[in-house]
Length: 107
Image (tube, rainbow, N blue to C red; front, side, top):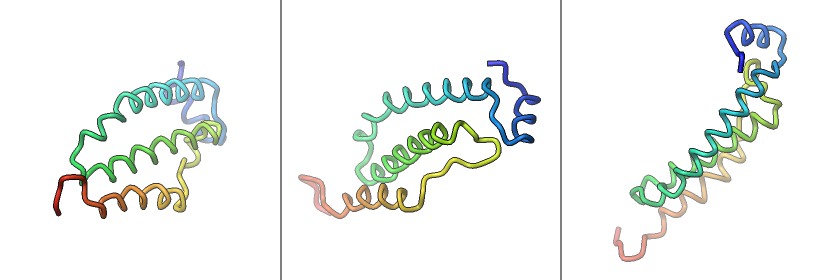
């Protein structure tokens, strides 16, 4: 993509995002989403106790990718984040599932 340390430093200094960086990040986000699609079914195979944390991370990291895109791929001069409200709205329902025993299991 033609991105080197000079392109990164220049973009950071100016607070802009060079199109080479945009293309590289768009490509990497596409690859990451593909890996996420492949990995998602595996979450259900994990121990029930760890599923809420993994699913929460899965959803929130996916949303960070959305925020990077929405922010015009400006990652050198700002941080892409998910709001605290969205973090709680994602995590609470996942962890609430632990309060309900799985079928056939006694706690």
